[in-house]
Image 1 (cartoon, one colour):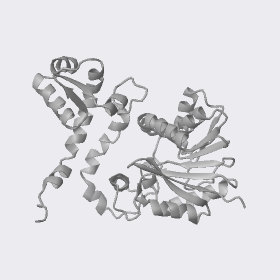
Image 2 (cartoon, helix red, strand yellow):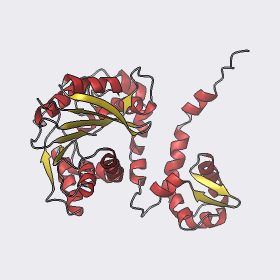
Image 3 (cartoon, rainbow, N blue to C red):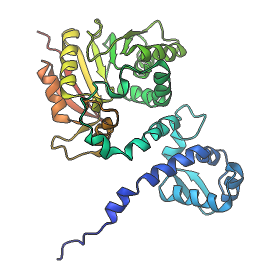
Image 4 (tube, helix red, strand yellow):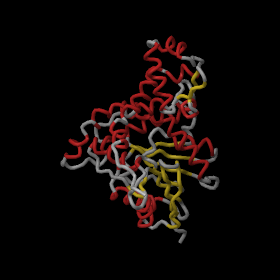
Amino acid sequence: MSPPRVDTVRLQKLVRAYRESATLMAALDLGLFTHVAKGSNTLQKLSNAIDLTPNNTERIVDACVALGLLERHDNTVRNAPDVDRFLVEDSDQYAGPWMMFTRPDWEQWNRLASHLRDKRPPVVLGGYADNFTVDDARKYHAATYSIGLGSGRRFARQVDLSTRTHVLDLGGGSGAYCISLARAYPRLRATVFDLPPVVTVAREFIASHDLSERIATVAGDFTQDAFPLGADVIIMASNLPQYSSANIRLVAAKAAHALPPGGEFHLIGEMLEPDRSGPPDPALWALAETLVRSEGRAHSVSECIGYLEAAGLEHVQEHVFIPGVLTRVVGTKPLG
């Protein structure tokens, strides 16, 4: 049997992948999925609703069907299930701002080789350096909040906190994890520990859920400052590839010090397989750190387990958090 023929098809698909991103973003700009959900489900109706020529309407609809964003049934179209759930405006789970959040990075990605050649010393926090403002934080967390709430609900389903009293969320951002956990466990208290501009924004989100009495905020840099005490569960679900190995080792050690005996530290993030063969997500998130000159890197599952074990935590285990995207590594502080 002859070996499979080697051609350029895969490489061509990779080099033109930006067209798929652009198609999705254009559809969001046009409100295409929202109009489909509201009944504009034929080419004629869509052409009128989004004010495009019939030919351009056909082009964007054909592309969305081909990419699995729309489904065609005879002469009508409907949103794919994930599109209908997350990309229709006015939905509680609308994730359009998060999908569009990286659009400003396109120009920088086009100069990736130049960024890779930059040999200046890295910045520890990269995009969260000293010039990060309250307005920056508000813009970022307006885009990520709905996704964070969903992740927090997922954590509440996966981890039994019924006997726990206080959660500390390192780099807790908008407070989405704490909000979800406080709603799932009415007796639980929580603390968001993040940079000063971020906790200003977190207080606004927390207040909007009437949870200011149960969720506190502490301003600081968890890579440098001591952790607030009193939590029996500590979570770090904050952009893992943004940080160096030394930083994550330090965070794990500080978590182990701050926890009471029997307390848990959960490290959640994009992690490579032990042989660093994939998946692509953590590798590409780490590559994105090149654009902001951070010292971050892609961490493997085995490395993350090692960070917790080196901190003296025991019963360290890995769990799938979001299949193909996020992994959760958890360890417990010894009782003795």
